[in-house]
Image 1 (tube, rainbow, N blue to C red):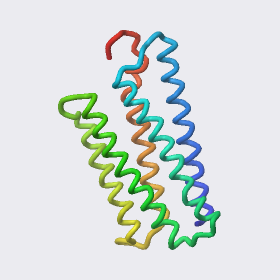
Image 2: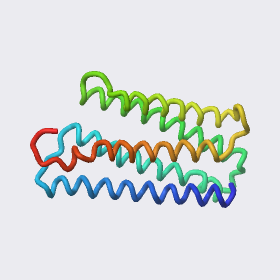
Image 3: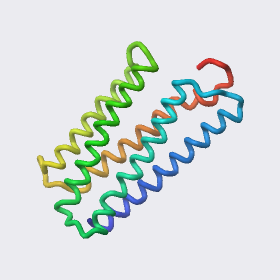
Length: 169
């Protein structure tokens, strides 16, 4: 693992953890404004916190493997397999949670996010197999960055739900 790869992933972990903290502040602000948390709010809070902590933890995995003297030829396929497995499960769980709480068709922006996320996870599985290029840290970093950007995008899209003072969202 190069120092550039390590540096990038550690900075990404820091940014992701900051996102989790900021999300928690916004949820606390909702309570301070007298708002209660509906099932929809709770689903979103879980998405922000679980997603942010997931990116933080996954960004640290290659550094941990490096500390254990695992060779780079194993580090990236193993890290990618762990991330791909977790993100696959996470996408399925989020789909189920959303479908349970919010009936009806998904908005186009949600469908696009799911589609690109599935493409990203497929890229991780290809990185595990070393197809079409040998496994490396680039695809891994791209997918973790994508995930954090999506959690941030969803946060911005839904922030008004948390700051709304009325009883309904």
